[in-house]
Length: 253
Image 1 (tube, rainbow, N blue to C red):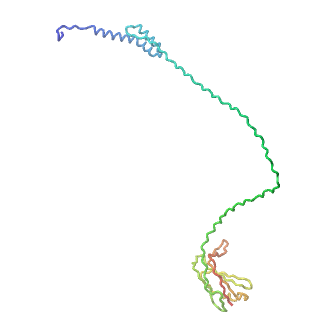
Image 2 (cartoon, rainbow, N blue to C red):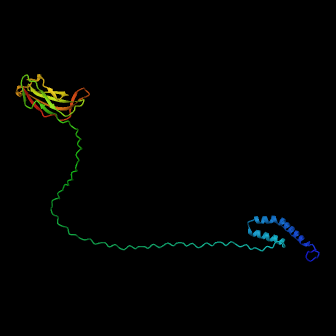
Image 3 (cartoon, rainbow, N blue to C red):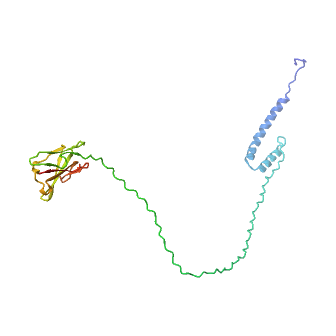
C-alpha cells in the first residue's frame, strides 16, 4: 500500500533481471575475449593489433564498436642540403721585369806613397790593488826607564854599585826583565844576558878590568821585558814583549 495515495504497490521484477543478465554477459565476454586482447596488446605492431581488435569487434558487434583506425606513417626527415664551400681562387702574381742598373764608372785616384799608419798602443788603466790588511799589532809593554848608574858614569877599583831601572809592567809567571851587558875583551865582543824578576842588579866584581883598555874599560847595558819559551828540544828562548830601554854606558877602571 502506498502511504500517500493508498494504492497497492506492484513489484518491478524486470530491472533486477536485466542487471544480472548484463553483468553475466560482460563477465562472459571478458572470459572469452581477455586472452586474445592480452596477446594483441603484447604485440608491438599497431597495424596487426588494430586488425585483431576489428576482427573481434566484428564477431561481437553488440558489445564493442571499434572505429577503423588508419595507421599514419611516420614522416621521414628529409636531410637539408649541405653547402659545400667553394675554394677561393688564389690570385696569380705576375712578376714584373727587374731593371738592371747600369754600371757607374768611378775615377780612381792616383796612388801616392804614404807611410803606413803607426800602430798605437792603448794603455789599460792599472787596476787598483788593495793592500793586504795589516795585522793588528799586539799590545806592547813600555820600555823600562834606566835610573842607575847615570849614563857615562865612571867607577874605580873596589867600587860596589848596581844597575837600576823602573817598569810599570807586572811580570807574568813566564816573564822576566832581560838585562844585557856587553863589552869588548881581547878585541872580541862579549855579551852577558840575565833574566831577572827584580828591577835591579848588583854589578859582579868579576867584571872589573874585563873590558879592553883600548875601549877605556867601557861597559854597555840595556833592559827589556821578555817572555821565556822552551821549544821541543829543550832550548830556552826569550820573546820580547816591548822595546828595550835606551842603551847606557859606564866605565870601570
